[in-house]
Length: 510
Image (cartoon, rainbow, N blue to C red; front, side):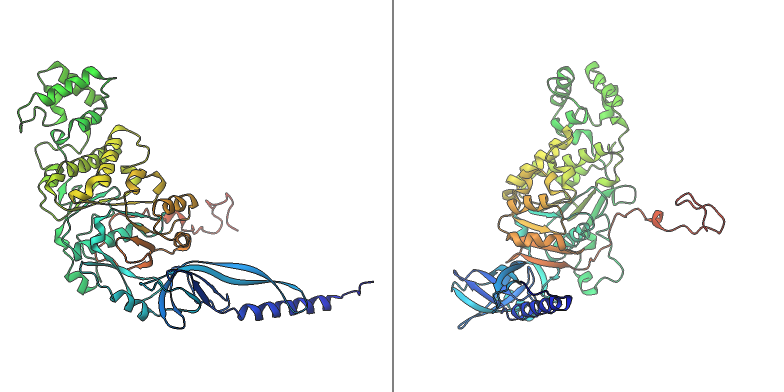
């Protein structure tokens, strides 16, 4: 007959179990093994764990000390038995990593310790780049070591994404500033939310040394009345496809009107278009043209504020640049249709000018609206088609794209798949992370998993712009931020006088 165990006996056995488990867990040594000298597996005790996903380590074998990076790290449990045969679940950290540098020598049971910032900095300094470095902050797991991007890597398209609140907009502005300060590369920014309209204004308290190298006067904004230039285009500057899209003409359904527009476009003298502005249609001698004018009037197109009536045109600036950094403030336009028109016109003109081989960084913010996977209308489809064309063929003409979005799955995959650089900020969507891991297969999958725990301003940077995928903490901006959130005054508690009805809950205050 089994001996009855009281509460004290159960507690004693439980304490013994916990003590034995802790002793075993603390005795687990941090060790790494590699069969090829490059990829390694690692284990360590969870007690006082110093290893971090994305962090740097030194692997100390008998005849070599090698710097490495942890690419994945998880907590696991392994079953073991004590001297009495009692089963014990031993918890430990297990992960994977890669060595940094050319070792090529397998190792087994190498001691693993966290690398110091000085050791990481020394490794980076061994192979200095001859090209300009874009300092955007510091390495997250090596504080004080600058996170510097190789500017030459921007010659391969770049994709940047992060959910709302991740710091993506701020960080994209920081990256543009770094390009302007450290290189001579011209920049065109499609700015749907007026977030970058103050790139030319240095913020109070900015680092004087960095301010001294920042070409604030090279930034020109085309936008509303407060901008350097009003954001306007001439109807005559648009190609035939864009003009038809503005008038919502479809070649088969609207064949008569489409043919009339085509005749008008082909009937002019080179350099002297028959139609300067869309409102010219209403006063044209040709009845078919006047019919097009009435169509434009009925659609409200004549009321768009984007039309240039004898003044400067954005297309002229794109063809003959007067500023190194052109910010196109789409957010200042009065309607989504006007925004789509200008975005399409910018991308079409850049592609039209490609044979001049003028290098240019084309920044497309909120790319899910400008080059979406499923365009909602013809204007957006034209913009998306040009974005795909630039992504596929633009590099050989000097057109380098930097697309940014909160919604990577909504951007045309033909744009994303052409990008060889990635800047990933906090992203909680498992579906989005899965798609990114598929498209950017050169990034270790474990590093993607860390993006769900990023704080504001943290990023995974990978591709041609860095020697090794790295976690980065973004630094401080030089210029002021544009745009603004709506003040959350609605969330401030109301102070209600005693005896007065409260607006919250429908009851008077006690």
